[in-house]
Amino acid sequence: MPREPRSREATGVLYGLAAYGIWGFAPVYWKLMRELDSVEVLAHRVLWSFVVGMILLAGTSGFRAYWRVLRDWRHATRIGIAGVLLAINWLVFIYAVAIDQVMATSLGYYLNPLLNVVLGLAVLGERMRPIQWAAVGLAALGVVQYVYVLGELPWISVVLAGSFGLYGLIRKMGTVDPVPGFAAETTLLSVPALGYVLWLFAQGGAVLPVGSLEVDALVAASGLITAAPLVLFNAAAQRLPLITVGILQFLAPSIALVLAVAVYDEPFGRVHAWTFGCVWAGLLIFTLESWYANRAVMASRPSGPTPSR
Image 1 (cartoon, rainbow, N blue to C red):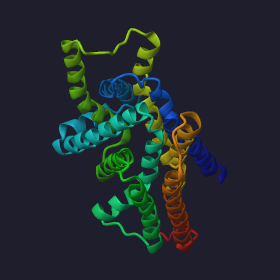
Image 2: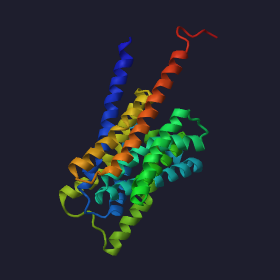
Image 3: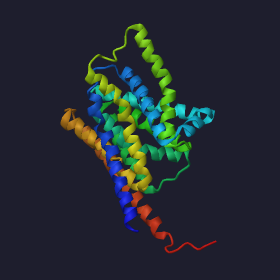
Image 4: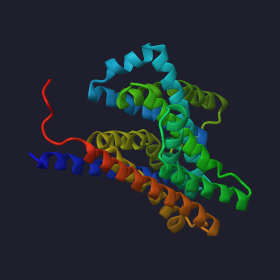
């Protein structure tokens, strides 16, 4: 009997590693399309993600929940806003990779979990312990010194962290399951995406399809590349404690940072070292403090059978 939870958790770790591994190596995939217009690539990503979303719904018998979301104007409005935030995140990421700013995407996704904490505090009324405040402040200090020394805001990092943080907040406040939610988001986004593609064709400005089998196949695969890590992540989240998921999420930006410096030769100077150092330290402190706090809560719970009522 004890082996079953361990096996379930081990499977969850594998799912999590696969999800964050795909997200981490995503710049390699999008680099292959860096010569294409980012907005047009986004439109096709939305449309192919919609196709994959429909396939997922068919495979999970989720059409009833999907239609329930779209028929309820409150759910549809919330999902529509979440979809816009997701589209902004996708567009900025595609654009950043195309202009050799992979490191900026890495910083954005390092900042994201700390921003989630701030959003939870400001919007959901959650509380932070003193050490957590110190961790968030340390990460913020890294960004402030970046702005002070270089005289510019790392807008790509800020927009990526902000858009994904707000997206997560809206989805957390709702009650829509992941697959129907993803399908509903891509459905609502596919309307303007299809309109934009048709407009490009009418104006004679469409580039896609380019006529190259390799490039066209890459674009068509964008739906799968988008949906696969989301499905894997949800499978991991169902099997793992939240603390474990929180630790695993640092894998993706770490892979992206290594790619930026070692593969794409992006500059990594003293300013970057201080910024990332402050963010890493803040994340480490926050994660360890959360882990110890979680252990203390678990230890305080009474052991043994629960009294019958």
